[in-house]
Length: 230
Image (cartoon, rainbow, N blue to C red; front, side, top):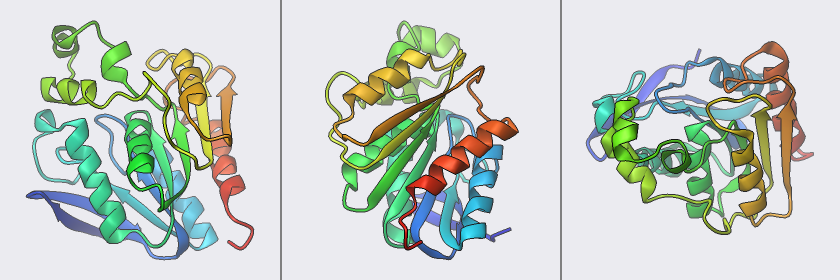
């Protein structure tokens, strides 16, 4: 296992694991209240190791091995941390792999660092979930979503218009995902400006997409995105 290291971002001690290797760097972005030691993150890391690729995993502030309080975390702050990881740690071009909320952050990263992002993989991507997932801020608080995060998310919505991302995008979504409705994946596919967008609906799949055959589908998707020279 790669050694745990830390990066200071706006006074927060952000934990990360970097596997040195060839470009592109694969950057895994966890979901809400998840961390870099989850099943999909570890499987992606093993994929990178087998192919000699650089791999980055990190924990948002207040999660996993990072410092800070989870309830103070916001989408904007976690995006800034992801930007710092890309800018300061990533080798060459980057393939973003975002799970659930991590898919939302990945989309913003691709908009802000278009010159660095080679491709994007969204696993049950959940853009705008503060909007379609809750009636209002009170409902979000009642159901355990931090108020600061809800307010930040409302300011960073993407699905209301075209999303100016031009790199290849691959979306994997469970047919019976009860947390992120399948319709969200179709809305995202249509909103993306890129002409190279594919949506893979996994029959019977839920939100986690962590069953062995679902992990294989994710890794097969990643493998197909690699340049011939890699």
